[in-house]
Image 1 (tube, one colour):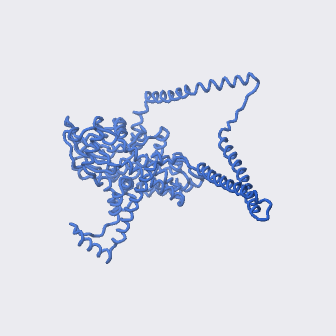
Image 2 (image 1 turned 45 degrees about the vertical axis):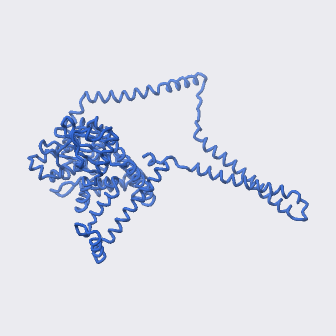
Image 3 (image 1 turned 45 degrees about the horizontal axis):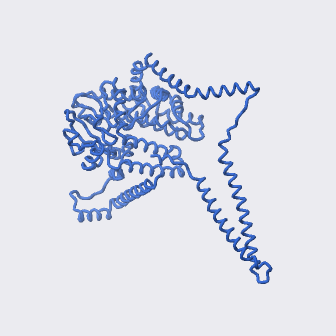
Length: 582
């Protein structure tokens, strides 16, 4: 890590500590009682606000704290809020405000960023440009504008200095999580530092709007066969890594059911479109929108088109993982406890010693009540089955593949949107409709032409790899034939990996011999100098010479100690940390 980055991280850490401390002190003195009422009266007398000071609820205070800490923590709050049903109602309602109610930054900074990236001010590049932001998000804010050809657009402008702050925040969180992993087993089990590092890497990737524009184009191609699904198109000539111009979408969020009903739209049709789109992205194509929370989905009231915004975060699944994800939904629909355990086990990798027999036994004992509920009661997949399954996996020593974890998170968010539209579809209904959509969409994708294209593509990979390795194969075969002709095979043992250790042992032996020699010189010269210092000693003439040897030996010894310490520090120096690459 460079010195400047280290200083930047320390300063950011101080600001985080100061903010948390200030909010903590404020919360401590904001409890109901004499002290709180006296404080409110003093604030009212000193500042004379329009609204009298009063008690601030804990959920409100926590939301304000996240907003004060900055975009990284707001993003974490948004992720937590997307799982609102696992939170108390007041906390879920307050954290949901983080999806849209984020403090904007001044227009002067917006104008400066557009000039720096696009080479001209907004009033020249656009026919009209609204200086008041349409919305402010954790990483950017959006302004409405009109192109010179009359098209309505939105301009997404990145927050100032967001990259450095985000990078410092991620480093701080990863370092803190590593300290926690050394003290708490649960942190090690969930690989807390790895999760936060992946989270930070994904966020930093979102800051490149060139990637977001590409993701939008690709997702539009994926969703094209699904009628009524859309992703806003980017305007390339008015976009850059930090400024993104997109077509304007006029719509409402899925939670605005009263407005959707007033427009005469069928909410079940809209929910079904969302399910089919999720299946098409994740199971059919393997390229999916990884953050489809309700704040990133709009429904156009005039056409009923469902549009997914913010394509900065996407995920990709291999063919094998897509098959396993489909199998996961199938065993849930069939209420197959053992099949669910086997499928999740195949989707995971062990991070410590495991006991499969105990895992399957615990899985059947704890999950059977959820997958076999009383008659008339639905299976609560998102709120019960999946969380309990993840807990059992972690307790057994297994961890899901990161991309699969992202896919399951995306599926739960899609299920949350459909439940907001049609509350009766919660639980197993979402899974059933997703499987029906899979069987409906697969025939259109798995065609002889498509399979032929996949085979040709994979075969070309193999041929290219074989061509690159051909010279080494040829050289090796010639050497083997030559050795056989001479009557035997020669086996070569590569010991290059031991060279470093051998050199270290040789150096230690030389330092040890040098140390013995220096100690002998020091002791001998000290004795000689002491004896020659006696007045009656016949060796008084060699006293000066003995003192010179003593001083020289001591100096050489000191230099040797410093050199040895330097060698030890250098040999123990750690390789470059993964967070230093952020």
